[in-house]
Amino acid sequence: NAGVTQTPKFQVLKTGQSMTLQCAQDMNHNSMYWYRQDPGMGLRLIYYSASEGTTDKGEVPNGYNVSRLNKREFSLRLESAAPSQTSVYFCASSEGNLGYTFGSGTRLTVV
Amino acid sequence: RKEVEQDPGPFNVPEGATVAFNCTYSNSASQSFFWYRQDCRKEPKLLMSVYSSGNEDGRFTAQLNRASQYISLLIRDSKLSDSATYLCVVRASSGTYKYIFGTGTRLKVLA
Image 1 (cartoon, rainbow over the protein chains, first blue to last red):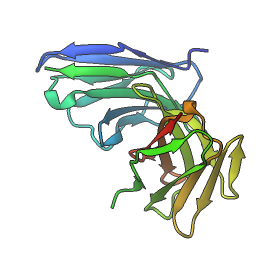
Image 2: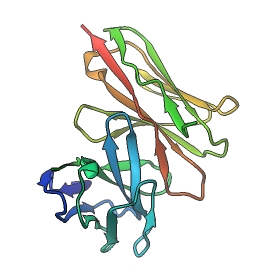
Image 3: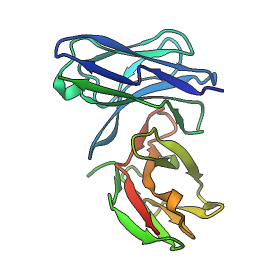
Image 4: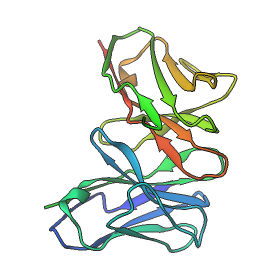
């Protein structure tokens, strides 16, 4: 049982480059999320998808787009990366009131 | 005021000690509460949910005080392996899929 799988685990981008972070879950959860974690800031919600076919902005959506491709997959796209987007990105899924299951994270550096 | 606040620590305790963390939340309508554990450079993992009547899981006890709007985590007989950051997580209301994370309390258990 893989849970939540994120790819890639590490990435270095140049300013202005684009990339997509992939996330897939095999727990049949309805809700999926993208967070970023920065030192001293805690986890901040970028976007979430309450169910297949819906997406909503979280606390820090600027500079990001998302796609809920199907029930399993929720991708995060950076169209034009900026150094301020250097962070650790976590995907998570949930069902009901059972809390989140997180992926192992993507460490992104923008130079 | 932050929606969820935690003392960042670090709490340095000897093996075998009992340690307690508190977490305050600002939204009195908050519905669900959790403690997560995050090891260095890893994803957060659910430690335990927090129920109104309080609940225990082995050496870990969680309490909820709705009147004062805080939750607590008590760890008895601390082990070296308990060293981690403990995140307080609050679900704002029953109508939201979003969970608010505290910035975490760092625990170091010393030999």
